[in-house]
Image (cartoon, rainbow, N blue to C red; front, side, top):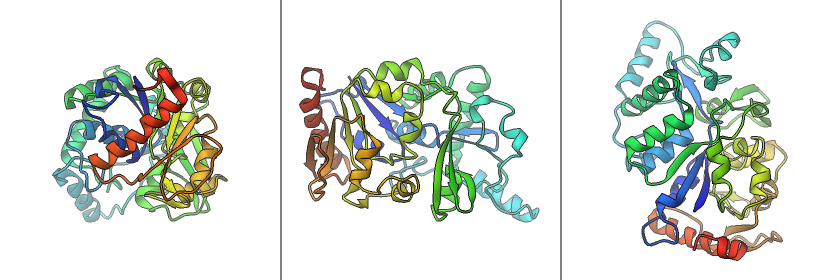
Length: 338
C-alpha cells in the first residue's frame, strides 16, 4: 500500500508508471487530491487537481494540456462569452460579493465566482462532471463520497480521495492585492509578484478519516508545486505529524534551480523559500528521501536516488517510479512497497 499526494500535473504524470507488473498494484494506491485550488464557478464546484487524477484514471484526460477531457466541446463556454459580450457585461474573473462568499454550500467558501464570461474554460463533458458533483453535494453527500462515486463512474483503479470535506481556499497575496490561486494562475498567468500565500479556512478544516488512514502507509510526494499544490494538504491539522511518522519520498519538480513547469518558482520565492531543489527540501522537513534528476547536484543531507526525472510518457513515469521504489526501500525496509 502506498499513498500519493497529488496537486497540479506532476503526480498524475507519475501515476502513468503504475501497472500490473510493478511492486504496487494500482488497487493498492491511494491518491490524496489537493482541494485548495477548487472554485465554485457559476454555481458548480470545480475541483481541478482532483479532476486531473479522475480524468487520467478514466483515460479521458486531455494530455496536451493536462487538464480537462480530450476532444471536449466548449459550446456552453463559448455561448457564455457571446452573451456577456452582447450584453456589455465585460470579462472575468468576477468574484461574487463578500457576503455571498460565506453563504450557500459551505464547501465553496471564499472561492465563489460568477459564471458570466467564465474565466476558466470548461468543456461541455467536463461541466457535466461539475454539475453532477455539485448536485450530489446538495443532496447531502460529502466531497469524499462524491469523489468516490465519480471515480467509480470513470473506472479508476486507484482510490482517489480529497484532502478534506471542509473548505480551504488558496489565496495568493500579491503586490496587486489578494486573489484566489485560479485568478493568479489562469487569468493573470502568475504575473503579479507574490508576497504571501494563505490557506484560508485551513485552521478550521480537518483531514478526513480516509486521508489520515492513507497517511499511515508510505507516502510519495510527486513532482508538484510545494506551495499551492501540496501546501494546502500540509496546512491541515495533523497531516505533517502523520507524515513525520511514516516513510516519505519526494520527487523534486526542479533540476537544481530550473523548474519543469508551472509557477512554483514565483510562489516559493514569494513565501521565502529558495526556488530550487534545496528549497523543496526545506518545504518538506518530514521527508526521508528524495528522487532528483541526474543533472541535479544538490546535496540534501538525506538519502537521494538520482534518475532522469523528466516525464513525457508512461516509460518515463515508470523509470521515475523505479527510483521512488528504490528510495522507499532504503528508508522503509520491509515496510516499503515491495
